[in-house]
Image: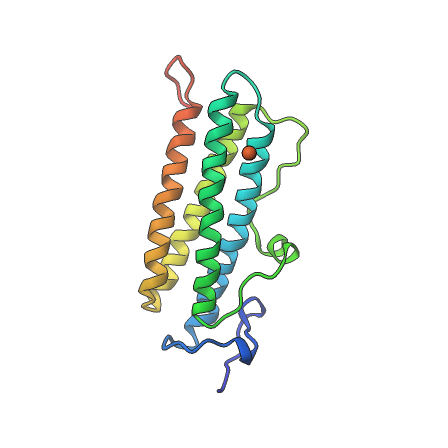
Length: 178
Ligand SMILES: [Fe+2]
């Protein structure tokens, strides 16, 4: 089977090239945006767990549990996104090193992060992922890949819910926003 050269992130050894009726053109483009989402979701999962472990203060229990719920949801999305890439016949992420190269979400290695800063940073990062998913959806639409579009719609909805909960949790009792 002739294989059109693609971007290195999505080039697939012939033995792993699952047959698909989508055009060869579509596969590297879809794999690239989906693999970046896999990497960003790993990074966001890790940061959400970091904040779950290190949150402090009077709202400890609420935030500790909220971050854990959100981390579990993000983690679950990773497998679906990676398997979508394999269903398309491309290769997905292999390692922590590859995640580090592909991700756009920044690490937060600070000794101490206040709860308000955690909520704000997670809101910003979830918005980054939402924007990336909308862009990936456009690529899926362009190639008439309705299955990728469909799973992305579900994950956009989940991320918007996370953003909503983080926003409401960030309001002060005086009624202000963040
Ligand atoms: Fe835990």
